[in-house]
Image 1: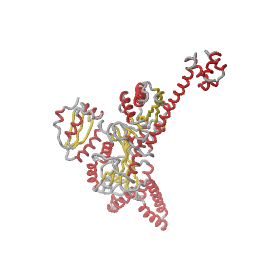
Image 2: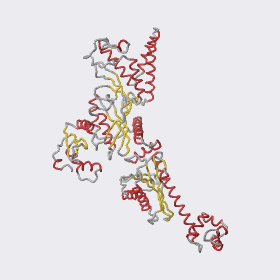
Image 3: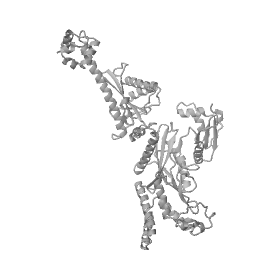
Image 4: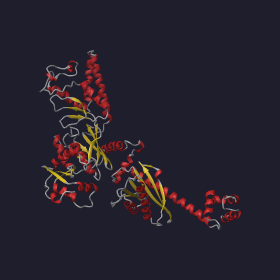
Length: 608
């Protein structure tokens, strides 16, 4: 059951959000559009070029609900909120990888508090983190509490207040702003300094603490001096951590992506004052046929927008992104208005900012590997070169399992094919296969390659064995076309296939007019060359073996009275023509079915 076209004709031609629902009223997909009617109708056109996911969504949809808004920016915000609320199965899903703790400073309160939280809310507070090391987070908070007299009570000052100070005042942990013993201005100055410390500026605070420690020591107040010394040690620990993560630059968020089929990971590095303060991770699912632009749009809009926004409260001036996406201008405008200053999304092309993108992407890849191989052995982790290869060839899946084919023959005779298998970038010799080409194609490498790939693919399907993520063939466009057709005939149309031509080391891909050219020092190219050379070695060794066997068999066939059984007996005993020629007449005569006469005849015909 699908939506009737007459119902689609009555949809508004206005910006807004649409929700596609099934017959039970469950929300399948939520999207936004500047013109709702055109966008929704596009799902139900009989277009064969549409992806399988889109066709399945159209088949299941029985109703559509639209919400008209005033602008594309409002549609973007509403879409992010509704997706978080309903989590439709056909939308890209973002989930927290883990609920890491943050230090929260309630700057919107007249007398702010500082405490640890795992829940981030859009309440005007400042959040610092996430802290992947709970020990470091506790150490940071302890430094703040020793250095500053921040209130720990939960009174809503100044509306609520106790009649007298609590124990924290008497032990020197608080100056009792609740009863007016500390002014709001003095308390706010202290909070501003705390924000600088948590934001990475420990040097200016360190100078002040050293002065206090020196004054206490000169006054013989050794207890106070010891407290200030402990604060300095805490500041030193924070400073060492920050120096280890000093990346240069200003206030930035850096987004990195990694994907493997339906799954993916997004990482947002939070850099403030050139210091890496934390990392946010989101697990992705339901990627299907989505390109990197759509994926990045979903990550950015839902990370920075929506009720209960899970991003940081303080927006950076710049967000570095690995790809362009459609909603970028809208998102920049929304975030700039929220921050009260310009916030830009920038895709760097060179320099240090590109290296920051690479760092974020490396973090995403490592997190992805932790997720994918959580139940596997560490040896099954994919190397970085596989992600490079995925990016170079535009593959949907990280090519953890790859098979490479090569055809070998001697001037059209002894035609064979070799198949080598690589798992996570290393040879897996248990999966190697070799076969004699039965079609009698002679010098026709295209047909021979098609037969080899077809037999191999059909065997995988029949046995239910794992299908390679990438099939590589030695050759050019002709071999590529033959391999692709063979995979399609076996029902493996979704399997990625490529060919590597020897002369220019170009990689040909289906549907692309121009080959992919990689630098000679590119690790991804080196891996493809290694696979191609291994397949060539394996196939050629089989051709040589058949040629030697054929030559040996031909010489023995010329001897009168020596049939198949006697020829096999000679080969089994002596191994080769040279071995037979080196044998004595008595040794040959002792074989089953032989006599002195036959032994003499064999040695005579072999020229001994």
